[in-house]
Every structure is written in structure tokens, then in C-alpha cells.
Image (cartoon, rainbow, N blue to C red; front, side):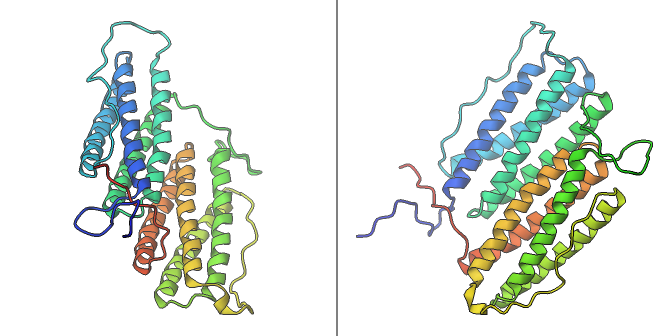
Length: 325
């Protein structure tokens, strides 16, 4: 008789792997913690607009808690303890200024973006869950942008050091981190172009080559956009990769499955890089939207590659969650 440590993926039950279980539990726990923090801070807020902003944030978190609780219940996943119904106090703490409250919530919002992004790129078994996490990420990015703009307007957001170019300007348009992310991204895209073109010589599967063609179009397009941005802001450009590759190596040496997994891993890593660039682009609003667009495109590409990899059986699937009985 054969025994399995993991739940059978077949049948009518919805499949979920152990990483997706952690993602649900982690996001649920973090939302409970954020709700309790906001409930406490509401007692000390003076600025009316800040009060409206954090109440909106609270409502969004509570909506997501309901969604995650429903998923956890359906999948029989352990749930975290909930915070008190509310936190009320008439004690006044002078250290809890509006600026401090803003920075604390902004920091938690930023941290949460990476937690959600991790859930998106590691949830590869359950497509419905991944779509939920992706929606969470979109809403949190919108919330991040609104909160950042509000903090800048109030003078509560401390700007990073500016990037200095040789050209004299009235006001520097970039901070040092934004300049770095532009430079880092163009290097990433050049490396990915070179690697993808190299792998193209070894790919045999027709559908894989079609996916790689689509990916090359994205990489070429984004590299051109990045080159334009770096030129505009007078950031030094690195050398470009060769236009084409012809390898003398036997094409049987590298298998399609290895090519697919290497590219797929690169897409996952790029998603995190785009997000980091977006949230750290706090001075130049158009550049933040620029990187946000890269993230959306990368997530679309991720979904296409994942669907193809699952069809071919090339995805490294995490063990299925073994439901308690």
C-alpha cells in the first residue's frame, strides 16, 4: 500500500500548497496587527485628513481580513488571534504626534507591500488565491501612493538625498535611490536580454520559443524606455549586450525545462526589484508610476509563464497542504 504525506491534489477539493497556507496565515496575522495599531493611533490623531486616511486604511484592512478568513476557513487553515474590537483611551501621549503616526503607518504600509508581493510570486498552485493576493497588492500600492502624496504635502515625509548631475538645475528631479534603480534596471534588462537570446538557440519547444519571443519584446521595449530615462537624467549607461547570439555548443546540452525554470525564476526576482524601485521612488512621482508599470507587465508575464509551466509539468510544485483531520 502506498502512503502520501501530502493531501491528494485530485478530486473536488481545492488544492493549496504549504507556502500558500503560510501566505494566508501571514497576511491575516499582519492585518490583525495593523488594525490594532490603527485602533490605538486613532485616539491621538489631531489632523482631520490624517484621521480620514487611516480610517480608510482600516476599512481596507478589515475587508481583506474577511476575505482571508473566508479562504482560511474553506481550506481548514489555522487562524490567528484577532485584536480587540476597538481600543479607546483618553490618555494623552505627547510623543504620539500626527507626524509620528503618519510615519509609523507609512512604514507598515511599505513593509506590507513586500509581504503581499511575496505571496503573489510564491503562490503557484492555487490560481484563485494568487489573483486575490494580486488584487491586494494593487490596492495597497494605490494606498501607498495616496499616503505618500499626503505626507509630502504635509511635510512629514523626509526626502532622500538628491542625485547630482553636472547640469545646473533649479531643483533636482531625482533622489539617489531613484537614480540607482534606473541604473540597476537597465543592467538587469541587458543581462536578461543576453541570457534569453542565448537560451533561444537551445530551445526546442515551439510554445516555449513563442513565450520567449514575447518576453524579448517586453525586455527590448523596457530597455529602450530605461535608456531614455537614464539619458534624460544624465545617468551613465552601461555597455549593451550583443545584438544576436550563435552558439557552437550542441543544442541538446541544455534542456527546455532548465531554460524555462531559469527564465521563470528571473521573472519572480524581477517582480520584487520593480516593487522595491516603485516604493523607493518617493521624490519623482512619474518615475514611481514608471516602475509600477514595469511591475504590472512583469506580473502579467509571470501568469503566462506559470500557466505554461504548469501545463508542461515543469514547475517546482511545493508540497500540498495536509489538512488536519
